[in-house]
Length: 145
Image 1 (cartoon, rainbow, N blue to C red):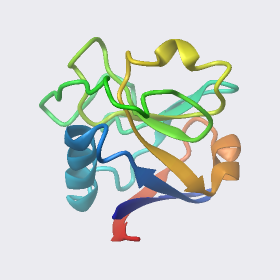
Image 2: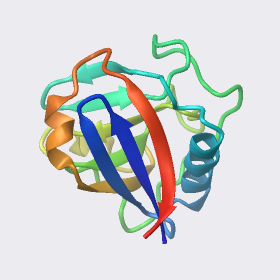
Image 3: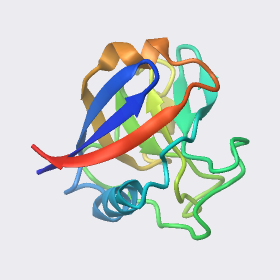
Image 4: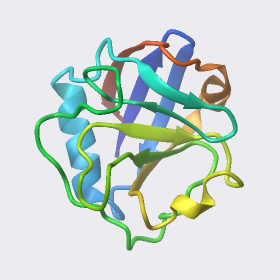
């Protein structure tokens, strides 16, 4: 089983993927990570008690990889909770590289089945609370667990 290590200036978050529920989204994130796409990008959007968001190549929230992917909303793990990694988008089937990680369930439950949940932080949860807008994603490393 593959996992992601999201290396940030505040520490490392380890993410287990929801490969059965969101295989296309997971494959896209792994591909971009292995190409070094996320290296040096920042968390351009940080909303306390809601989400930390990164993956925009221009740092504004408007950029992406130059293509879009389909949403995968029907799996068993499509519920936003603390530590859930989900695909940001500007409307159905418009995601690409931007992702967010949830602070809690209370502020994010309205996103269920509207944004593809494709993993969950299982180690380094405390890092989510420490991330501030502009903090760098040093690199994302994909490994086998």
